Image (tube, rainbow, N blue to C red; front, side):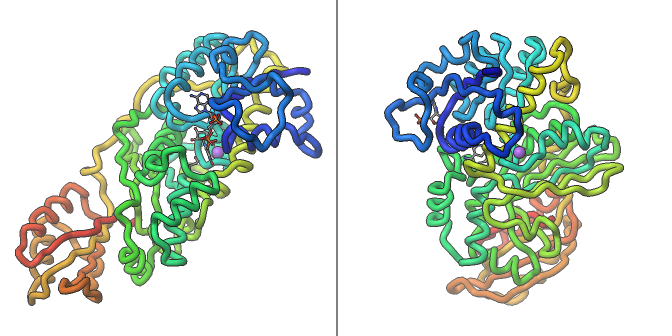
Length: 429
Ligand SMILES: NC(=O)C1=CN([C@@H]2O[C@H](COP(=O)(O)OP(=O)(O)OC[C@H]3O[C@@H](n4cnc5c(N)ncnc54)[C@H](OP(=O)(O)O)[C@@H]3O)[C@@H](O)[C@H]2O)C=CC1
Ligand SMILES: N[C@@H](CC=O)C(=O)O
Ligand code: NA
């Protein structure tokens, strides 16, 4: 047999990958050259959905990454450690790596790619963003001559699945999350999905590829979907929007020397192409010059879809191993050295949706208007329709305003005697 794989992990993605590699008929002929040589797991006696020859499955992951017979390590175990160390050992031993792990790449990418460049090996990560959607290779290759202006994506399948079902069925957050977990979409700890951390990891990776520099994950502003309520979904619908967890990377100025990179629930106009992306589907809208707009759409999580991306990386490496490897392939290797400058969220200019609960007094809207005026916040719409028990509900959508100014206005509004609370503040695309 030709190329030997050491696979770390046999969970949702690992199982999907083994199934795909074992089912070679009517697929790319290079699959014939691949041998699943070792598979590392934590619990060797767990029932599995795949059959592997005796001796292939092991709990000794160190032995896999140190085995001289293995050409490619496929890391589909997740987590930060021992994963990072195993990847670095594999690289040091001259092995190419395929990973689905956005958490490890967004935190340790600089260390991992520096080590890979020094060792003359590749680290491939198509499955790490957008699951089965080809988006990493397009950004690295097909779109690489473009100047990218913005990347706007729905990049977390779990939260999109939850928001879609909350919107269409009025379901409760907790029930839908349990379904997403049983379908294999959610991370081992779904906090990463729900709090936007998984999407932040992914937009950091996309921003790095699109804007040609490293991204410090700590600079990525991140809000999850816990505070999105059925009430806000209903108001958004009335106002002509849907609520999506968007991950956005955008040049802040003309020369793209300053970026805005962020994740937050966002009101998306119903006419926008991202508004119709539902369920576990992801979509990534890339805007650049000269291409204009291009959107990638497909299943963002799940065994088969993610395995498709993992196996495409494996095939790419198998093809590379069969050709001259004396020089690094400039479109497969990572060439970023510098860090991109990212603006604080207070500098963001956006529209905002805000829901106020107020005591039912006269003149409240006038007082809101006065304070907003003081901070240059102009209002696109003001709606007062609902009541929550004794409190009146006022929903405001602003025109574009600098976030820092908007927050100052809200801080002053909070002190008004007529304001009970401000349950929701959401940005509008
Ligand atoms: N699920 C999805 O749809 C997607 C997942 N990903 C990424 O793919 C990766 C894997 O995710 P997923 O398949 O869902 O995860 P699972 O939790 O389903 O599987 C993890 C696998 O890794 C093994 N494992 C974990 N830690 C260790 C350890 N310390 N030592 C040995 N084995 C270990 C587990 O062993 P055991 O089986 O014995 O417990 C299990 O087989 C993650 O990085 C995730 O973010 C990316 C895109 C989509
Ligand atoms: N938990 C992730 C899995 C894929 O990366 C998601 O829900 O998108
Ligand atoms: Na992908």
